[in-house]
Length: 287
Image (cartoon, rainbow, N blue to C red; front, top):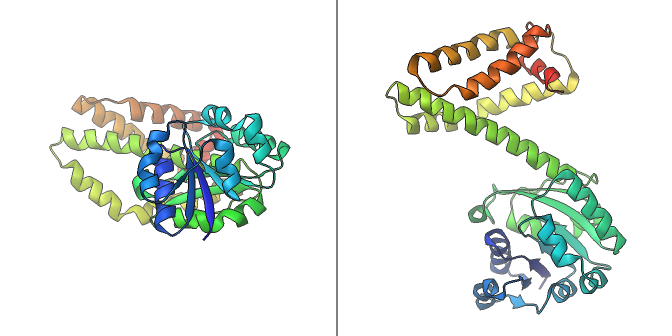
């Protein structure tokens, strides 16, 4: 039976521990409030008396707490630092790219292999084939923990030894997601203003998601190659659409903050002479 330790038993940490237990792993758990461990102990987990004991119990330890400050409060003690030598630490706490770099240095100072992980899933999705955990850092740490990670998430891309890659990729994903949220919420106001159903529109978006994905793939390739001069959709063409969004907001008397923000960026691109280039030339005024 393979051992693993899980430190931090909030909703996500508990979900990780539970799925590992359900898949036959021996799971040692620890949380600052031991009450959160009680349901997992009833399901077969072993409660460690402290964080150092939890790390000692397994070759691989997952830590999943509120933020990096909480992580350091747990890990940066003499007892824990002594126990880290020769072990693998998989950091699943949400943090910034620089925090990942700093945490890797700290782990290496205490002879631990370090893997940074960014969970792109909700607790209820843990264990599902579509759940994603981006990983980066030590290849040794990834190899040691890969079977554990693929147990809790079906998609676990390893992004290389640049430890900040997982965090940067997750933030990039969230930036895309939040931009989509804002666009969708503005779309909902357009529909409401004309007495149309928002849920039907949501279903339509789900149906065309592959098409949207292909568009994003194309724009990513254009940005990477810096070849903007043969546009499928030019900045000028899209500026016309943004202006139409502004006109609709004025006519319907709805909030215009989303198209107003977009209009500002598009106008900068037009003023800079990028109007006849591919839409992704907009990135040049964002650099």
